[in-house]
Image 1 (cartoon, each protein chain N blue to C red):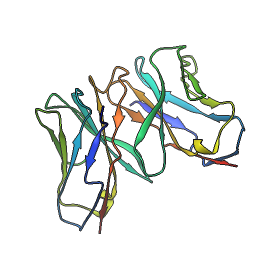
Image 2: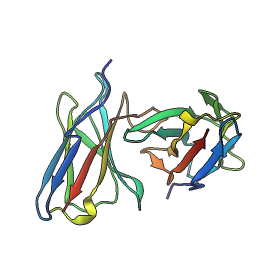
Image 3: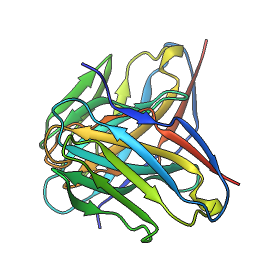
Amino acid sequence: KAGVTQTPRYLIKTRGQQVTLSCSPISGHRSVSWYQQTPGQGLQFLFEYFSETQRNKGNFPGRFSGRQFSNSRSEMNVSTLELGDSALYLCASSSLTGGDGNEQFFGPGTRLTVL
Amino acid sequence: GDSVTQMEGPVTLSEEAFLTINCTYTATGYPSLFWYVQYPGEGLQLLLKATKADDKGSNKGFEATYRKETTSFHLEKGSVQVSDSAVYFCALSPLNFVFGPGTRLSVLP
């Protein structure tokens, strides 16, 4: 069974630009969660999608948005990039919702660098 | 809100030494508890989990017991190997995952 895939793996953008990251969950998984990982803030929850609906949202500004398609693939978008958005963005999928003890399977991440 | 506290390290040990990484949590209700590991350049992998009080999760020689009375989920391994060098994250999951800051472990030969 293929794991969680994320594209692209690396991305370099400049301030003010926007970026779209993609995540393909494990086949059959309907829940996709996104996290931002930085050395200073650690792993922070961005949002979770389940069956094309945003189920939970972390404490991030509205510049961060996401969506999920009918095949469970998910995208996250960051508009008006800031230097502080440089981070590793991790996607995780699970078979049910992200809570209730269901294991989350993580992708390798997309390393975003904002110059 | 829910939170996880863990020793941040770095922790440096010699091969075959005993490992303990402390993790305590604050949560309403009865969350599930997890340890994830992140090797350099990779995403997170589930190491072990426990879904209710007194459960013991174990995998690859690592163990952790869900202690509700002390709100703890300490990770232990009796004899670490160089290949265990990684960052370890304690996490809880009441609804969405809340991660601790991570503990970097370096094991020297």
